[in-house]
Length: 238
Image (cartoon, rainbow, N blue to C red):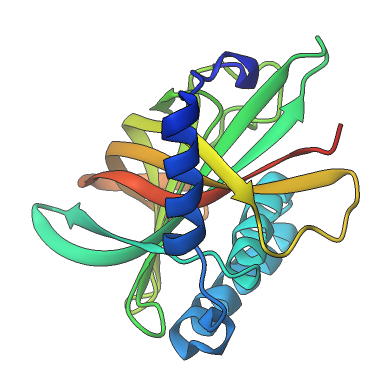
């Protein structure tokens, strides 16, 4: 879905949403929260690993998630089911508007969710449309024009057992339901602006253990469904 086609909200709804976003999405004391600092550190460490693996797209997404938390975005508690067992995760959404070669603005959606203080497990999902289909992680990057519009990426990291799992089938629905006030702290890059946002998410994926040669073994199912997940949208200043 192109960013320009996101459905507008009515003036009254937009006003109420902005007020709710201001009250519920941010708090001045988050940076002192040891649990969130641990989550930020984990994202930044994973971003460093992604750079070393040559996955600059993933590194950029992770750094955007860490930056959102540093700007004071309050995560939303969601329920994540893994092999049918429910766990409580904290989650944020980061939308990044990019201009493709055709001059169209496309909203890339990124879910970051973690369990535990410090994190014991981390779930990442990325897509560039309302509805994304998981495929083999070796296919083209989401940033590649050869990548299908409905492409999505999913990764679950079990930090306790030192395992990484990649989504190889299933789907990710991540819909921007509205934007609110500007973020309390704007990006240092003057070419971008940050706005508070809410997303509805539905994730249903089959994940396989990620080995050096690629995903292998029996798949596990990871699902979540939540409305009004707190997040941000980063878009060009113009």
